[in-house]
Length: 314
Image 1 (cartoon, one colour):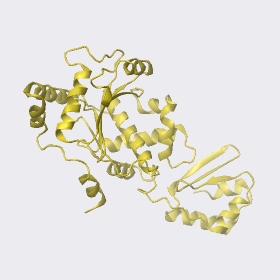
Image 2 (spheres, rainbow, N blue to C red):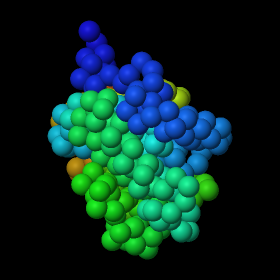
Image 3 (cartoon, rainbow, N blue to C red):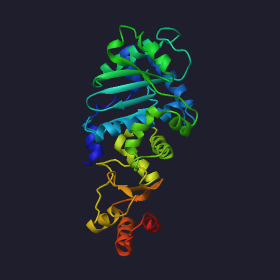
Image 4 (tube, rainbow, N blue to C red):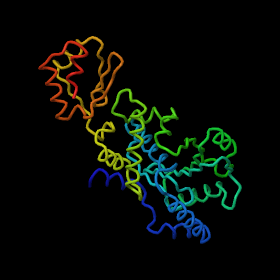
């Protein structure tokens, strides 16, 4: 059994007929409502939007958690599932997180034909009925003020399993990243650059968004990351998933260490350099044949100045 298949078996299987499961748990009226809700969400999903950006960012978040050892396994991520809190679902053998996104100026828990609180209650009951581990429901909103307001008013019957999450909205991916510093730390952890520029952070979220769209039925997060790497090889740095072991020859390092004003970093598996107000990162990892050629050229020429070093950059 391959690694992905082994991890997938750890995630509780969902019923073959989700609609039948909803009807059995909550009745025919709830099943009809869930079907209409799912149909409306699927029909409205045209191009990159709030849900796409949020899912891509969640992929980045859980990847960092996995790299840091907070998660023991790669979770499974999906969107627009058949259910009541259905925009994004992140599941593993220990917990299932359901996210409902609402990009609106005014949101309440208890008003409307289908109140948010009722949807959260239904989703929790359905998840328990299906045997999903430790189900949690999350309301995602696009302003901090609204998030704080909603946090203070979570109904008592759903409070044990519900939370409110703030995630900013933008109609363009680059604006989302450029205008929201709160995203930079997580995205930066997946960048190949030691000190990534904002454009490089945009590239990280962009390639993750493209990869998520490649799995409309959902996928294990490591599958999504590998798909992202196939789109733009060497865009991401993920220890344990992509090879980033770095091997520098002692003579190469000694030459660079002797050049005044030059600093370099290879901790993420890519060669980053800076000096005298300029900086850069090579487009290929230190494990690539191109890097061996670069090392050999430096060792052959033995530059002694920063300008001499720059002339040798690929």
